[in-house]
Amino acid sequence: MNLNWEIANAVFPSVTRKLTDLEQLYPKRKLPVNAMVTRFAPSPTGFLHMGSLFASLCSWRYAKQSKGVFFCRLEDTDTKREITGSGNQVLQELAIYGIIPDEDFVLGGAYGPYVQSERKPIYDVVIKAMLLDDLAYPCFCTHEDLSAMRAKQESLKVNPGYYGEYATCRFLPKETVLAKLKNGDPFVIRFKSNGNQTHKIMITDLIRGSFEMTENDQDIVIMKSDGLPTYHFAHLVDDHFMRTTIITRGEEWMASLPIHLQLFDAMGWDRPQYAHLPVIMKIDEGTRRKLSKRKDPEAAVSYFLEAGYPIEGFLEYLMTIANTNFEAWRIENPQANIFDFQLSFAKMTLDGALFDLEKVKSISKDRLAFMSADEITNKALAWANIYEPQFALAIASDVDYFKAIISIERGGEKPRKDYAKYSDIFPIIDFMYDQYYDQYMSGELPFNESLSKDILIKVLNTYKANPSLDLQESEWFEKLKVLASICGFSPSVKEYKKNKEAFYGHIGDFAEIIRIAVSGRKNTPNFYYILKILGTERINKRINKTIALLEE
Ligand code: GLU
Image (cartoon, rainbow, N blue to C red):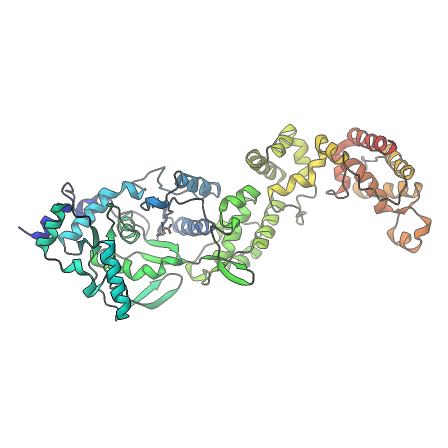
């Protein structure tokens, strides 16, 4: 009897399906000619990393632009590194950014299962076929054997690894292999490489172009002793039978490409195309380095969600690092949907993309400034409900009141850009709510110390009697100048500067007194609108309260 057959059956006694069965079960996808099938393949090892959001955004856009398919597969075969539940968290965070796979490990789909640990029956069929075809073999080397081999290679100053003459199990007589298997000796399965270190192969990467790399000569492990596949082998099987056409993945996988191409070729399967995406870098004390999960809080996408950066601002930022021509397009199309922009591999940044928080802020400010009052209200409330309950309560206590506040200097071509993130809003406007106003008033009030209590009270009483909020802003301001004059303040800053002795201060100083009384603070958004929204009743109450405090 054929010994390969016996070996294959000794390893997989109950596997009866063949490669042709899998080909039938997972046929080529029926899609338009240039449609791309892309995927995001996270390992469930923790939070969604910014680099992963970037990679999945690109992959998703390429699929959508070409009317293809984007799916998400969970790579959970490294059981030691697994953090329970993190796979689902990753899907949820992607969904927050609008990245919804067509098929994934929750939704399912025709090419599943989408969790590697559930795909063992598929891997087994392929490995059994490889054993039968002499493309793979069991290896019984122990850790000690491998250490001894490494030591020998070091002393001989030859390349390390399991290859050529060092691939000892490759040369075991088949009878011995069979006997060891029957004896229950622990083993892994290795791929039988026909490569040679002196050969170069031509690599084509959609982003980096064509270049040479050294052929792989290592008999890499494809199935570990726990029966689960290694990354290399799972990539081969999954992306073949899930019919991925373009592998978009981090550039750290570039070095393994000769192995992957060799595996596809050995199986006689079409090679997918590859696009190795740039890694996201940061400048740390003057040097560029990879954004690190451990050192950089901003490496986690949740950092930006918690801080309340608007989703659309963050996505737009990622588009600027994806394609070098995105920003020029944005200038031409300031209000267009960012996904009207067609991402291209040719315009991808080649060097590690540099993360720039200031730019995230400035893009986010733009996006928040151009939202309608309704939109920003809904989004701020949704954010606050999760991350800042007291802000959510304030908004929900009177949604129209909040909308009026957030509408100040909104709309038109040049809206004010006060907020980069939802968490910036409340600290700027909280005084509009009595409870928070009262907190400001319980502290030291920031009145100019050179003004006497009597002058302050006079100013406040004068304004209280003449709020003039039925006037337009410019007329109201003229009226304010008149009131300032009556109280001994110069209506003109210029005049005041010429003759400081003649006045208590200028119009700005005058307005500041009223501002402090109604807000507890020196700075507020546009004061006229603040007053109008507060309304005379609330203004009077606040002024009375301030006067009472001054008189204490
Ligand atoms: N699970 C691998 C990782 O998280 C995926 C690499 C790939 O996309 O092929 O790095």
